[in-house]
Amino acid sequence: QVQLVESGGGLVQAGGSLRLSCAASGRTFSTYAMGWFRQAPGKEREFVAAINWSGGSTFYADSVKGRFTISRDNAENTVYLQMNSLTPEDTAVYYCAADKAIRDIVEVNRGDYWGQGTQVTVSS
Image (cartoon, rainbow, N blue to C red):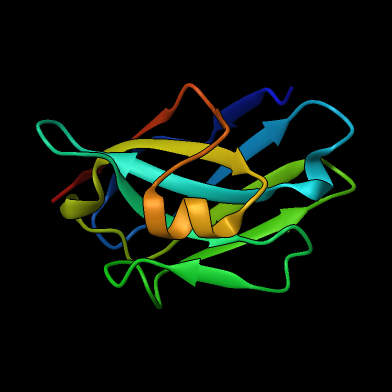
């Protein structure tokens, strides 16, 4: 069992930056691939970024490539999402997820465990 708690969301002006964190419980964090998803009002949940268990492989949605960076610290049981050059289109609730298979995160928008989400609002 893995429990995930996101933090770091908030209100930021367009062009600004935020860093989201997702803290995981349990001693098996390093065996899971991790991902970030987001859901805007009236829209379906969409994949944002993923990272494999070691941090050696990362994947990004086209909409965030070059602006967002996912990273993890297995010693701290935490995954991060650094978001730069934010636009109002990035406004959404951001969720982190853990899954044994990174393919599930990237290709199927699936996760074994999910956090409760953190709101990111970008004003124009």
